[in-house]
Each structure stands twice: as structure tokens, then as C-alpha cells.
Length: 97
Image 1 (cartoon, helix red, strand yellow):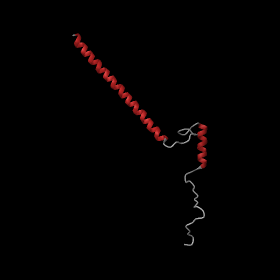
Image 2 (cartoon, one colour):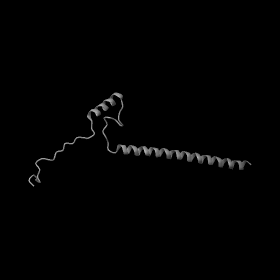
Image 3 (cartoon, helix red, strand yellow):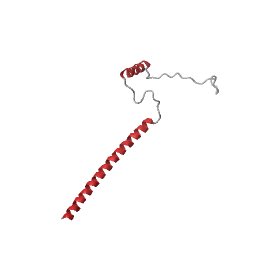
Image 4 (cartoon, helix red, strand yellow):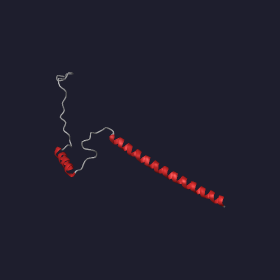
């Protein structure tokens, strides 16, 4: 146990090199996006807000649900008005007769 000491004079240092990172390819793709006018999803300069994707999906689902409920409500009221009109016609037919 010659080299072991519980008190270190300096922290462990790691030299991490990303395995799949190609800076030249990244620069080419960035330049191509700038020239073609393509933007990645969202604004380029915007700061990432944690949970924004999930909140967006939830609000999209909510608006879809509201639209479906609204169309069902319209269909239900249309059916009720048709039934009421039919009943009035039947009652009117028997009263006139």
C-alpha cells in the first residue's frame, strides 16, 4: 500500500473525448442550414425550457379534446332540434285534423 493515501492533493482528472462527435461535419451541417434557410425545430436563439415539449403535447391534446367535445355538443343539439321539430309536426298534424 505504498501509493494509497486517503487524502488526495488533487482531484482525479479524466480526458473525455466524445466517440461520435465530428466537429467538421457539425460545422458543414450548420453552414448548410444557414444557407438553405432551414431551422431546426424551435427557434435557434431560444433558450430551452424544461418540459416545454411535454406541455406542448398536453395542450395540443387538450385542444383536440375540446374540439371533439364541441362537435359532439353541436351534433347533439342538432339532433334535439330535429326531434323537437318532428314532434311539433306530429302534434300539429293531429291538432289540425
